[in-house]
Length: 405
Image (tube, rainbow, N blue to C red; front, side, top):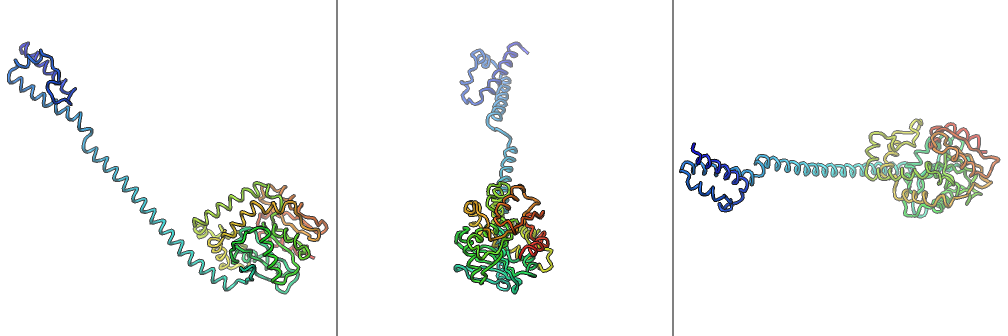
C-alpha cells in the first residue's frame, strides 16, 4: 500500500479513537480534527470513505453501549424480580402475623369464657362467704366443734388459700377449729378498690372474726400473713392467744435485697406474663407452674381442686387488689411495722426456712427479734423451703400440737 494510504489509515484510527472518547457530541466540528487530517480525508478514494463510514458506525455503536445502556436488560429484570419477591415476603409475613394474633385473641376469649364459667359453678357449689364493708369475703371452717380456733392467713398473692391450705387445715382439724380466710383479692373473695394498706387489711380481718363470733384465736400466717398477724396481735392482744409463723414476713426483711427487693421484679415479670397469656399456655403443659403451693400428694386433694387453682391463677390471679397490695408491701408496709414485736402476752412459734434462703443467718435473727415472750416461744428451722408447711406438714402439725396449751 502507498505511503499516503497508510497515512490515511493511521488518521482514520485516530478519528475512531476520538469518536469513542467524546461520543456524547453530535456536531462533527466539535471533534476538533486537525486540518492535516481534513485535507487527507478529501483525497481519499471512495473505498476508503466507505471504510471510514463503517468505522464511524462501529464507533457510534460502541459509544452508545458504553454511555447509555448502563447494564444489560436481563440484570435489570432480575433486580426488579428480587425487589418484588422481598415485598411479597414482607406482606405475607405481616398477613400471617395478623392471622396468628387474631387466632390467639379468639383462643384467649374462648378460654376466658369457658374457664370463668367453670369457676363460677365451683364458687356457687363450694364457697362460704360473709359480707365485709359491702364486699363478699370467702372462708372455710374445718373442725367446727373443736377448740381453740386457729385463723390461717395466706401468703402474698396466693391464688386459692382455701384449697392451698386444705392439707394443713384438715390435718390440724383433728384437734382444732381451723378457719382459712381469703382476704379481698384472693381466691373467690371480691376484688376491691380500697387501698390494700396494713390498716385496711387488718381492719377487714378483724371485722371477719367479729362477725363469725370468734373472740379468741391463734393466728397462723404464711409469708405476708405474718406481717398482718403482727399488727393484729398488737391491736387486739386480748383476743390473740398466740402466733404460728410459717416462714412469715417480719420487720427488717425490707433491707434484705435477695430475700425481699429482688422478689418484686419476679412479681412484675409474672404479672406481665399473665397479661400476655403466657401463664395459661405454660400451665396447659405443666400445672406445677401455677399450682406450686398445692399439696398434690394429700389424700383428700382432688384433680378438680388442682384445676380450680390453675384457673384462678390464670384468670383472677394478680388482679387489681393484689397489685395494689404489692405496691404497699414494697413501699410502706414494713415502714409501718418497723420496730414492732409481738406483745408479751402473745407467745410465738416460728417455723423458719433453712433450705434456700439467700441470707439464712439474718433471716433467722429477724424471726428471733420479733419475739417478746421468751417463756413459751420457739423458733424452729426447717429445711423445707418457703412452702415448708406442706412439704413438712406432719412435722409442723406435730410441733403445733405440742406447743398449743
